[in-house]
Length: 355
Image 1 (spheres, rainbow, N blue to C red):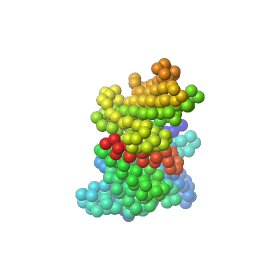
Image 2 (image 1 turned 120 degrees about the horizontal axis):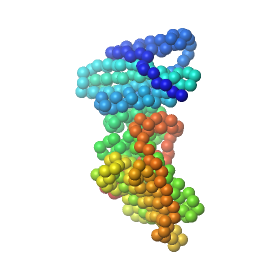
Image 3 (image 1 turned 90 degrees about the horizontal axis):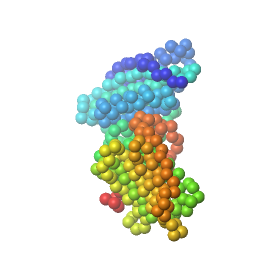
Image 4 (image 1 turned 60 degrees about the vertical axis):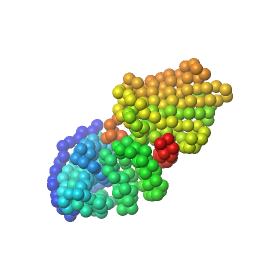
């Protein structure tokens, strides 16, 4: 059982040295209040750096730290950078503890507002504030510029980068840029995408549709796949699922051979950018099959049709997870997601091919 308490301490500090000093004081106070002054206690299991574009995204990051702190105790550094603003660094620091079973876990939070030239060199600002010897995850909240996140200094301190490719204005261009950047940095960084995580249930149900003996024969006979999303343009989610299918089936992303077609349509019951339908057309041994996944009435409906006759049908409740829940999932993952990398590469190629 988990109980989240109000912040134990809330302090303001100006300047990097003052922030460091306050963080050290918070540690000592926590040890003293526990009666174990002089002991070695690690409050955090990871460093979470949240790079924000405005006050709203910083508030979202603050809310996420509060909700996820019990499962992922972290030193969270929430940064709102303003290169056009005055040269200054202001910080609000807090320590929040949650009762978990017989003990408690604590999350530290540093909310930084950085102005002037320092905003262009965030790695040098963040590094002195990190807890040593534990992982550093960077979360781009909203749609901050990607070039800093893949800069040499940032890659050197970061094990995992969490982004939401669906938050950027140019979905196709963003996916192609991410693919190029990952190719450049290699294994130096692990990239996690909230847009990709949103498609998990679609990928899972589609794969399960071909698990049975009768349907397994159609896997190598897939001739066309249609992936549709809600809204006025094709979303990052749609391109990523299309890329996943193309990469898993080892299809070329050019117009030759089988096709994965991405499209969008208006659907007032589904949020813009979310997937609404996937249709897979297959042939094998003189037989034809159509597998359709469609979102209707708060459920995902799977229909399998072989030779014009209904073979199987089921509906699975569709639970819409918010961004914080999805980020929590990504914090729990381990290692590099090679399937995502392959899907991202194919998505970039498909989006360029289909224009």
